[in-house]
Image (cartoon, rainbow, N blue to C red; front, side, top):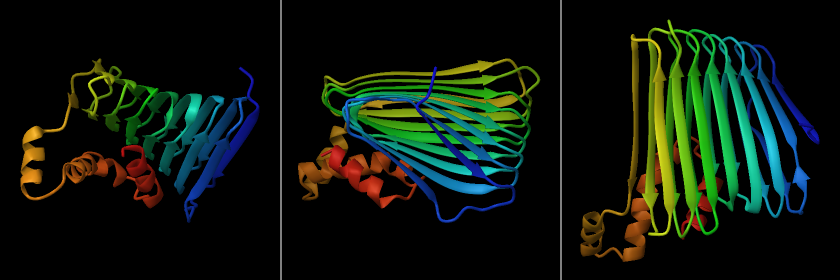
Length: 275
């Protein structure tokens, strides 16, 4: 397909980029927008990039291509806080030898959002740590589809996602870890935890493992639950209001995701969204 915009970010060899690079994408018109992003981290570079999507009343179809060379390090934060928009976002990550990727997705808006994420660990020592928090509200439809490909031995991956679903929101989470033949000494961990705040909310969580090599360490798990009434009762018996008790439990649930990014602005937005 054709793209209306091309955004190229190149981190040069042996360079450490400080402070963080922030890209704000704000669209508030009834238009179709097709941007293409290419992030290229040369060998032994180090950088931190945050991309903020604030799309209102529009259609977005975007592709991200991220390439990490030998020993490159990238901390990538992608925050999506749209309203009445349709966002289809495709991510492709290529990790060379001993490169290190940390990516955190924050999805908060009232919208239709699809995140399609492909990560290829193509050489020894490559590490991919991806995580995220999605919060579904009225009319939210959120879909995460993740495929983690271990294409070389001694590669490491981690997936850690949490979801809070309110009102009649609908979420689908599919996370596949695939380890090819002869990729010995690979390690992979996958966790997806979800908290339902409404009887009308719906979650389909489907963690998957596809392993063609014996000498590996892999685990995956998924949970779906509601507030623990015993803990709520305990907090209220200590004089804490019902509203504050629920707020405390919600913060305890998502705080380990926020600790990945240490961003007070996103913290404030999340508190506003889950009121």
